[in-house]
Image (tube, rainbow, N blue to C red):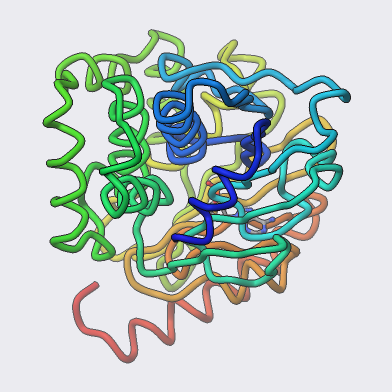
Length: 317
Ligand code: AMP
């Protein structure tokens, strides 16, 4: 981490990148880090470049940096395992590239890579970075809120096994900067009538395979019928996360150019399957590509086998 701090000191222009279809941890890590750097070194230019997320737009809304911003800059990519998922591919034009991430280190695409795949959120790593050098680095309330939201969303609200005592320590440090949990919860939990109705559709229409893999088919037709954004539709993956006898589940979502799989688990390890289907991710939360709907039976056959094997060896689901 000291190496990262020294690199930050060395450059006057720093760009911070996230991944395609960013989530709370991505946007939280981008803005958390950007705000810490800006507060600590006011003369540096810090630019958050990338895609926005409506869900966490209250943290900040990135735009794409100008071409001219890249010359002589330091690029820091957060919450991204592999190069092709960086939402601004011009990141390669930065003078020096650092990757900070918590996914399995499938591709060390930075000139320097700091990866801790035991951290439940990239925002936890950024908080630790701040804590390690808090004589030199300064936190702000807005930075703390961004990082807290990153940790909160990537742990399913502190629910997953990946949450350790360190996670609570980092969260408590962030809380001391005066952030409002009520405000954050309002922003994350209040839903529109449209998304609630879509959730009703998902609860009525999910499918279950022979051995207990639950899934939702989110077609363009359904997205259009309910009048929701793609992001709102994709977020429905949580609708079927607590079905007894279904330790793994997914939402298949039809984007205009591809069908993506948002694959989840509370038992079976699913990231190697995701890798075989053109994706990757964490052992219990991965993304992949289906291609076309006619590939669905093949995918279901593979995941159903994984669930069956899991159940044969585990008695708890
Ligand atoms: P998602 O369902 O898009 O939220 O993805 C779940 C997790 O898998 C996230 O941590 C993503 O970063 C990761 N992931 C999703 N798609 C891919 C991919 N194509 N390659 C590698 N990791 C991915």
